[in-house]
Length: 442
Image 1 (cartoon, rainbow, N blue to C red):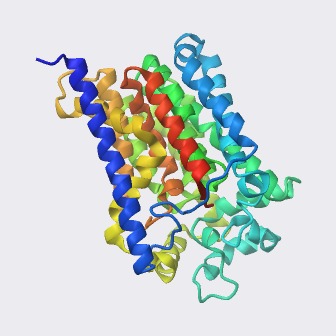
Image 2 (image 1 turned 180 degrees about the vertical axis):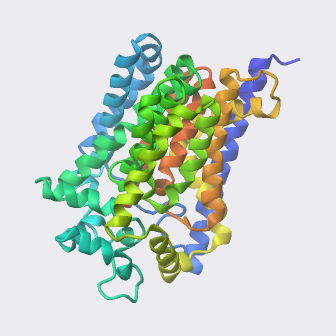
């Protein structure tokens, strides 16, 4: 009879092969559909990217960061003091995202990402009178409207655009500053997830997950897609909520404030409510933290409503705009499974194996509220968020960036993997391969 470790290793490999076959099928079927029907509207299905092997000034830095994290990440994560670990994880994540962005060179990889005709910086001059623009915001969402907003402005509540307007107002104007802001913000998401996992599961799990959160393949899109910034805001909202419901209720107000901001950055991030529900369940939330969360949660919606922006009206208009553009052409029958291939790419092979190991406690729940079960609940909630976004049909394509705030919470599953250096190598190689073979969009 084969030993249990061998059987587990074989099952891990099978999980990775299933994910790899899903990606391969999405590539082959997608290229056929795009080559014949031209309905996918992406350059290299299932990714919004173009084929183009290249290297740049970020290449040696990315190789060095990957090598250092693979070699020293697991032992350092095990022995560093907690606060130093958070700082080290944030610094390593910052270097990883910056180096990957600079593989595409400064202009294309950073400075121009948020200045294209689809992006937020194109409309900065239309926000001279912010209250008046917010009152009029929904009148420019539809394609037939006068001076309709670019896709990303129309596709998000105005807090997303206002972030870059405010950066411009304080003297940090232009794509370079905007890109640097997004990269810096996005890199902090790693520390936020670690704080939440420590509070909700245990410290050992958080420490084992740390190197995997640093070397996440999704870092290719964390810099400089604005979704990297959204990812950080959502992650810190959940981290503060986790602290609030596990004995530090004072963080509840901050959690509520950031949760409110999250849904005014992206309509789709209302799905973070599922993750927030898992946090409340795992934290056995009592009344006191919730009394602080709810007032904080009301601040951002109340502010935007008083300034004249109606969230539900904006969402209704966005739904119509979505089907006026590529969303009405892209075939649901392909993207409903190909989007999951994008998720496999941004979370990497280690996550595929980790999910197999992590979700098994939910199948045979006998351990009560053990760390394994707690981690399984948290990861399962993230999986439900992804599946809900998938079946909605409102995220056909480009989910390698759109789902970053949700998919990031699948990565703690890697904490249950043996031989972390081997799996970290696979994560790094995937990110480096994608970043050097493809010119990624957004």
